[in-house]
Image 1 (spheres, rainbow, N blue to C red):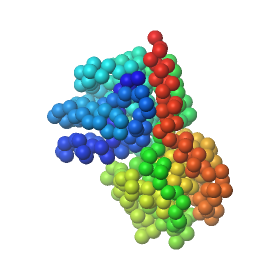
Image 2 (image 1 turned 90 degrees about the vertical axis):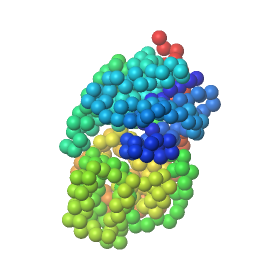
Image 3 (image 1 turned 135 degrees about the vertical axis):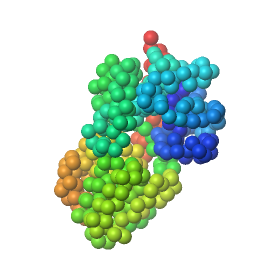
Image 4 (image 1 turned 180 degrees about the vertical axis):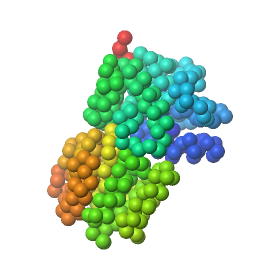
Length: 385
């Protein structure tokens, strides 16, 4: 079975194959791509990524997959709603001649390219939902988000087959893709996380990990920590965001008097993130809406006790594993209370006595589980008319 993925190039791979002047286009770790690798037996997997500003095609093999970087213009594509992007992939598509094209994400050009290349045999993968997020994203970058939202609506309306990472994600996407056959495949967690020790002694520390945006709830997290955490607790914040919002965030931390109790870590590689998760006790992520935050999955797999708002993907995972605290949605006072109670109850010390949710999560978010779900979907698409 020959499969072509149209996907982003993960940032950790870009440094070794992309011209240094173009690394700015590859900032996202896209862990859901590399976490699926290597593919299982009898899957000939090709992964093609747009290469903005690239001077030539780049090809390499890694983790059982063949990677292809396809040069596209460095700018102007979004303003044209990516309508011509498929032309840059046509030669590669004809060369590979895949049985199925699986696109990752609906808000950029990946799905548009896939639908043009092989319209009847395309699987649209949901990677966040720009249209759904508009109401909770804040005003920064609003033009870009509007373009992404319009692109997403047009893409899903044409879809025949879609796959999402959570029930919430599939339900939201299905409203726009009402003619599509919908499926759920849980995105696996990075193998380094799944094999890391989660039994180390933990500190009086909470961890926030995610994009520093209004939607991810970092401002609410700071407020809750300032109100609810004892003076001997610290908060570490991992992630990056736009300069204006990050400045606002740091000003709030100063206003709340957090001082040296808070540490801003910036973007972390996998090894550094694992160390942070091994030392922290609580994972504080009061996201206002999310299809299935990767960092939350990783935190559960590392034994941290999540504290989140009761909405969308986060509540789905916390309820599934019966592991974590859910505050009333968007209620700051209840978030404060839930964090305070979590610190007092120290649930993270009871993993072994709670039917071990970590081991359950690690199995649930494994690459084998993902492939076991994906392959029947690919076969169905291949056999469809």
